[in-house]
Length: 74
Image (cartoon, rainbow, N blue to C red; front, side, top):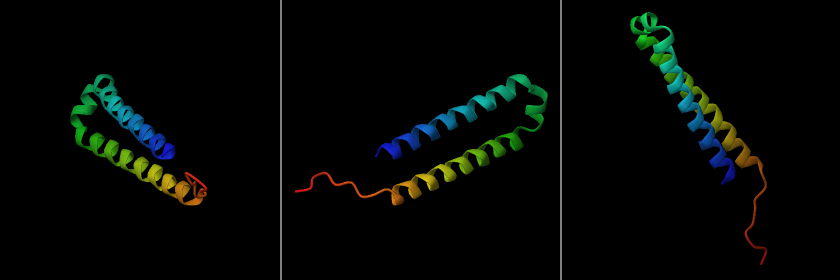
């Protein structure tokens, strides 16, 4: 469970970072953003999905590698 929660917090942080990066592009480069908004949005979405797939893959691999934890030995 802790690995799953850490992965969810990690992905939540990346999602917030992508949203903030989108807003930064709007403020810092307004003309470029409005002429290329579709490309910027698609690239941010693809980046976020790639990071999500990588994080989930590593989480699944870590959960399959770790030994089985028993609640009770009785």
